[in-house]
Length: 270
Image 1 (cartoon, one colour):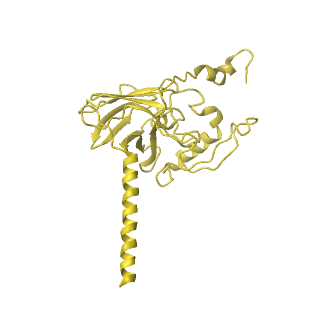
Image 2 (image 1 turned 60 degrees about the horizontal axis):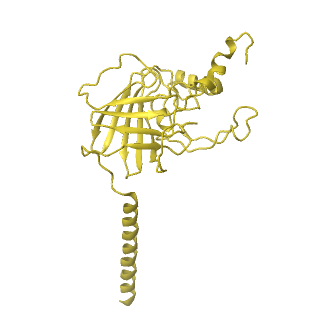
Image 3 (image 1 turned 90 degrees about the horizontal axis):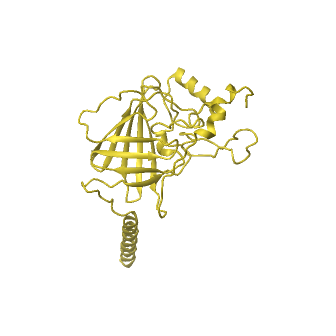
């Protein structure tokens, strides 16, 4: 009887400690801040941590361009693709492999082209969300890219012309901001490994607050020209808490001119 009582006492103590840990964790996570209209307040500067821009899938460390040493090396990373498989059609997989082989000259990022969606979200640079009830603006530093999420369109409009960043329409699903984007020009890559899609790409993004300073980001890609079925990436976005955090313009065009146009000069630079 005494042994049984000791076991019950120990179990009760464990449950009490667990409740304290859980309460502390919830307190640390904090409540989701609310905007004037009652929806989660996503205003602020956000940034990912990881190597998704190098490769969305699991990848080992690898050498970079010749003579760049460790500075130009590719860091190892865990993938953000759910299931770690991108369901390419055979001919599309061949193109992806060709992209990989030519990544140091053909990647749109190296040419300072706008990154497209969803790549703009996980570039290694912060971005800002400016939230209103009818429009939500997302401002990215790289190549001065930006996009407007139209929240006031009951019947989403097709983009008048295809573009790097496409056209985005949003709605709220509970506390999750759901954004549907399409109207892309088909020239963007998803990462430096050459993963890509065609102009038929449709992206559905989900921004779900996990607390005041973390958003769980998901993006599902659908493109019947390139993939056999839709596939999804998932990663957290973290609020920049440093004082006076800003999104600085990365005007990179001048750094890519030699790569793009050097062969046209009377004396080629490469």
